[in-house]
Amino acid sequence: MKYTYEQLAKMIDHSLLHPTMTDQELEQGCRLAAQYGVASVCIKPYAVKRAVELLHSSGVLVGCVIGFPHGNSCTESKRYETELACQDGAAEIDMVINLGKALSGDWDYVGHDIKAVCDEAHKHGAKVKVIFENDYLTKGGAGLEGDAFKRKLCEISERAGADWVKTSSGYGFVKQPDGNYNYKGATEHDLKLMRAACSPKVQVKAAGGVRDLDGLMKCRDLGVTRVGATATAAMLDEYRNRIVSAKSDLTRPGSSLGAGGY
Image (tube, rainbow, N blue to C red; front, top):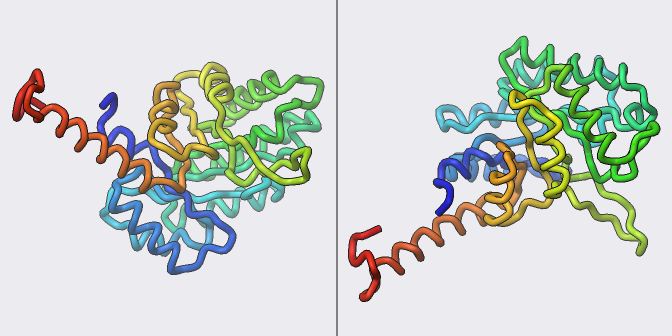
């Protein structure tokens, strides 16, 4: 395999964000994250304290969403929400930008909003991922076409102190021509664009639409260091299955390596 199990597992932020998630489902999700040895769980603010208890000594970090999923909270609310999450033990913060302000071209507001969260999180030793919600930005805004708009957000996020820029929340549903709602989430095009638009000190997180092992490995190929996922077990079980299959192939009679050659 191109990557080790640990390299891939430690890319995953196991997402536990569904609006109807029960306490039991939260606890099951935290145990699954610990079992598979992922990077973190990404959870709602009220659940941080319990997740920290469940994941103590597991090596799995607790991440918390802020202003989620639409970024419309006022800046002071986001800052205070960040403070509370960090006090409860969150080591990472995934915040959503104010999309309306960005599309209005109020870049000072957008930068201040991000910086307030980054400053608060960094004060507690936590790191910040800034969510753009790219499905809403395909047509651009404020006089910029879509790609230029996303590059602008990367530059603003980096100046404000972001540790990651992130494609999506996973809940940025856009009304389609047939009346249904859907989203693309992380696309190869956007991941390449965001990686190129930031300096090496800012990482890139893919979220929304990464549901299989090949997609996870493709993200790593593109320079992505974190992926938000609900299909954690399926992806990492597939990795283990492929390893077993590869070993089996190498130990068959007639294999060029012979028994024990793997």
